Length: 368
Ligand code: GN1
Ligand code: MG
Image (cartoon, rainbow, N blue to C red; front, side, top):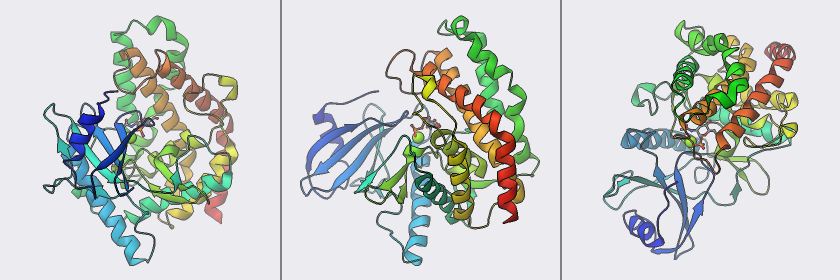
């Protein structure tokens, strides 16, 4: 993670239209992709300042245009409905010359947001009620974007949730063995290759038109939603870098992957890692409600597949990065991506045991 001196960050802050000079800077270490700072100005107002990872997001201005368009659409909807437009969606802070980000001399791309106060973000939740509210909020996000013109968006990362392509990339990394790690992860590789044919499930259904293409968030992990620090109500969905056309199952699935589990994504003790069917059920109820009746029967029937497949895809992505020598996700120690792979594999294996129960559950929901 490239971090800067305080002087460098203060100089960058000078490019943005903050309300006052900078009083303090704090590093914020949650995301796997971008580097983040919390800036407090002399008035006490706080901002998020981030370096967008341009190795991953090749068109940063395009990403910011997506985010501005989507947040303004959502904000207009909140205002029209008399809801909390202050905290209910992110607000991009422009540069002093009116741009939605700042490219420094070294080619790094910086962008800023208002900090959403009085909220927390969680890596795990243990209350089904809270998780149901998260589901409702992500469903609601999708509903609010149902009338948004998808052709106004660029694909910030093409084929982001194309699980078939992810699998092909994984096989190429096994073949290449760039970091010399293939021999040591034979079990993990086999777990994935045994499930090769599953990877086509959502992609093929989108292609055939059985599943509708929607505007989706695509990175709905639990830590990408801010909860009110007192009530734990969902307040604001963040990390909109990957908002683009996709499947509702991607959004549903990534929340299940990260939230219907008893442990953090990088828990080294696998005995602590379990798939939690009751959390799946709570989230499914919330999500369907939040989508406001927009989900088709096919989508609802495939919700269990969404959770299953996005978890499998994440195992594939973590293992691919491990085999490539950790070039994509930030890692804190050498085997971090392997530890992450193993938690995802454990969740996939346990989810398989519950598939019939989950399918019966969503079939019942459809009848209600
Ligand atoms: C990354 O940016 P962050 O940390 O919210 C990744 C997601 C993964 C997630 C795994 C652009 O999300 O796709 O699911 O890590 N984002 C990108 O924790 O690749
Ligand atoms: Mg992200």
